[in-house]
Image 1 (cartoon, rainbow, N blue to C red):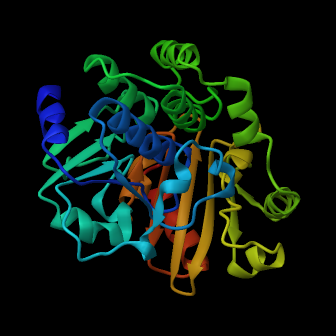
Image 2: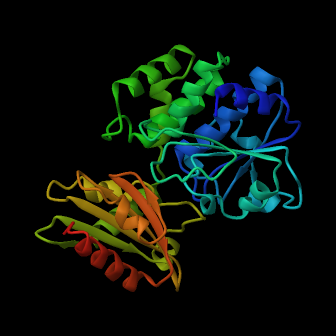
Image 3: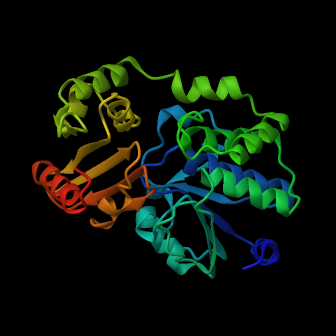
Length: 323
């Protein structure tokens, strides 16, 4: 696939849909809004944007995010000329939007997860990139696309959040150079950081303190995990917000922790695991349950209750000699 092909397919598409992954984070949302801006400014076309599951209030500041629709608002019988998935590591990660993806005349998959299996017609997957926002910047630079202040804000947010504020090991010299370029295009780094990391609600902070307080530690405190029940979220008046965002990182930050994970109850028979590691490759652990991600940050959905899911994760860690 050449970028010339990407250019041509966007030029020849009359209606375009941009898709986030389920439980959206800053990278997928920043990339969706960034792509919206790039297409609008460089092709004079408007795109539709769909956010799969609720928009976290943290990212309501993103330019053009108000134009995005929830999946429930979409006409699933519609056939788009082009559907572009952004930061969607596997096709099931776009949930019900897969219906629109499958109906599309052409599909593009732009991502940075090494577990991505190139499921679209056109695949631009760069595992060495820190974020999908970085991949998108590279595309824009190579095609000489104009990057507006709004686009720069979106892409900077994508990169900032997927590098944990430029703290994670995926932060490279290239990452910092691109971030600098985005600042030169008008992104306000200090303001974006405050929006993403210093604007938590009181209930979210109290909820995370509660979850950390009931964490379990194994293997001389090298393994740390906590379980989040629906009733926990309800207790702190969670209105559909993902209060677990960043919780796994807090457990990993403990000096003795090598591997941390959070098990979240989605239903009595379905659980979501989010894993983080300081050095050990935990992507294969999540892959064993149909998930994936990166070496030091991965996740999966397990079709079992939370108690059994904890057992399954610990068994898999032992099987792979990680604990």
